[in-house]
Length: 347
Image (cartoon, rainbow, N blue to C red):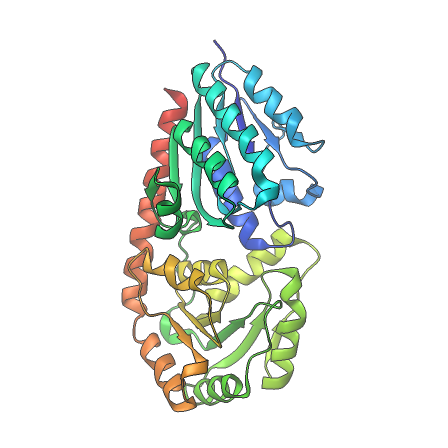
């Protein structure tokens, strides 16, 4: 009886973090026999970003056709998207369809895996349907405690991006860069932020480099560079090339300041100290790093003086050994999960 493998890898196609975690999930199920992939309306470059193979069949014509292939397959093995799952009222039909597909897949001797996720939205009906989906899945992983408590099924683990390769980067004494990458959909940093970053970088002999890991953040990165007199790494037209450029940049940095989770995860994998310092930070970065044992990496500037902000940055820099150890533990945990899922899919 043939085993057919399926992966749903839709996401934000201009967001390198989305590509990174979907590539990681795809690697949990990729095999020589090929994978039937649902990519929705993704551009062709998405396929190369995720490392899809020539033997894969990619569906872009609607989710229903892909789901029909899942439920008609013998012993289907299925991996869904990791990351944030929006559970608003519009998600109800999707979640019901996924729950039905999971039931049928299991009845046909298959396996369904939901990689590390986090819930956004609070539609009671969508939550109920997603809870059913989780109950019939073979493995369910969450990347934060709040999401786990909403569903009550599964295991809380680090974000899947921590399973990406750990890079040595430059030796610590040769690192002379402070990287800044802030979201473009939030208010511009305050005057206090600019004063603290400028003063601290100069006192530590670090050059400031700004970069965007999401296309929509490019204008914000350019604006910050202009105001600080910093270097700006421009977005390239080829996302996979840009991903490699930013990872090399993180490997040359002592610290990366960002309010994007996967900027800080990739930075920490490159040996930089991850730090969130903005006005009114959301819980996302704080909670996901707390999950791997790194507390206190986020500072709310609305409650802090410039002197306190620079002291915070200096204190963070002293945590590099702690960061390295916690990131290594998270990396190893995700790699062990990958091995476990691979065994499930060949059982």
